[in-house]
Length: 479
Image 1 (cartoon, rainbow, N blue to C red):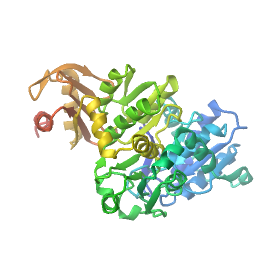
Image 2: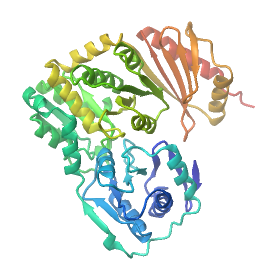
Image 3: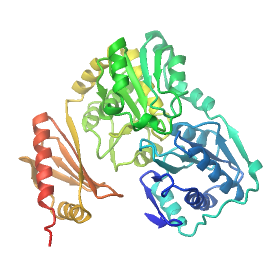
Image 4: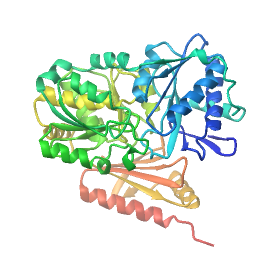
């Protein structure tokens, strides 16, 4: 899914186009991609609907946004730009709330500082479907990268997306219950767009909050805007030092969440999805299907079975989860990489909402977060143990592995029989003991990811070692 740029290549992944600033993410290529998006808009919307534009805190993201705005008004569209960097779920909500032709979001999410990206969010407030992105990609080849004429700039206006989003967010939370709990919370913004949002929500909900890194730093403090263990050291220490109830973080554009319990454990997205599914069922009396990607824990399947709920498995990428949310009532939908949404919310992942739902779960139960996690895992028949191997292979080796597993998948792994082979996204081996292994190639680099889940740490180690050995044996012999 690529087309030649001015002198570089524009490649669309699962969530828009990302590239390194000044190498391939250039002003010329932004104009080209914006015109490709505009060509799609012509087929789907009338020009009396505005196009929204937002951006994350990255270097030049605001200037790239201005460039896109000038291209769109040149083509006869009206543009409303956010007044500052903005979370993806916030611009997505406003795309629906304001009756628009959708939104352009300039973000590279959790990628390192040298990257920027652009994605199109339709007016239904969720990720663009493959049909939409395929159309945009097809338009790139014939799109011009010429500068805009500079006319019609009076059709660009600035707006604040925060009030409408916050008003809606508070309808999804039991603010009074959270206020009564008087939670002590540590919040690490990681220099992300959630600053000025999540801290404001915590304050509104009566939480005693200490915040870190709540200013724009285009280098993200020299780290990555990804709420994983290695980036949350300061947050973990603050939680433990002050005896806080929990620690919260988001990624760069605030669509992914990071959670630290009162003991300083960084909780996995799989764990949070399970915890919140149980919270919505038990404490809020909600019902609906559970949706997870092929790489996400099967503890959700166990919980769905216990409560008589439908479980849907999708390909990797929140766009597939969001699509299911638009088709049916979904209690909770999410993925192991840290995104989720719930019944009544937009079909887009939202790290701000996810963080606040964990606070709400603690407030309802009046128990420590670590205890709630233990109870949720026990109720779902756990624990189950997960791992992921990122195997950097040559293209020839990657092709050989995929060919072998597609044509002749193993009948057992580490002595455990394979009862079913799934091909929804990569190759998924469903094991007889309830465990599973997923091989999934990267679409943009010579990399195969191997996800696995089993019911014991020892078994997890054996499965990982055997998968590594099986893949090593498939390396092509050098001529």
